[in-house]
Length: 278
Image (cartoon, rainbow, N blue to C red):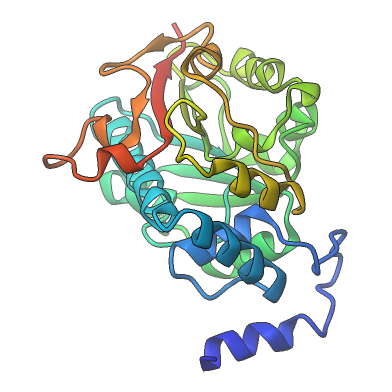
């Protein structure tokens, strides 16, 4: 065990102030940190993530493809579309390059609000996600299942101007919402609140392309803080209702505007796309 892992083990003996989660239960955001080679996960997260990787060794590759997609989408919106305001819901553990690092490299005045409902994520976010002096980052403790809370939060309204376009990032988070949660309606309520010229960025795991033993992965996530819900291409496209989807459309992540010829395409079972609100 590394020194970093020992530190994380020690962290579990002291409750995080204000934490409302049972930290002995694995959380997808911290499992994602494990896939990306991070150190900010707890023993329960590591155990669950190792079960997933044992079932499908390509999962870390999928996680990196998702991160790369986020980076490309953010860079395009900042550099080519002139977007200077961002709302990232389901932030996850900070992993460089973070969204604000990508967009503030284009324009240091860019503003970003990070939102998550995991106290571990928020603790690290507040400590590590530091804005450029010209721009701003803010952190909101909220759940995607309560979009009204997100939209009325002082942290959001203080940081972002709803008279100017905003890019909403829902990256690798919607597949943790069930149909009973009303996943499509939740996204629509957020998009409806955005001004004209705003953008929606989504990535979502799919059963269309999933590995043969995906059932084992789903079973593992069922025992965590959030089940994994795989949706087909049609259902993923429904999240973009009311937007104009940019080319190349909703596609496997490596095929979305790659910086270089993509590899490992058949191993990535996540769709991604970007839509513009007219």
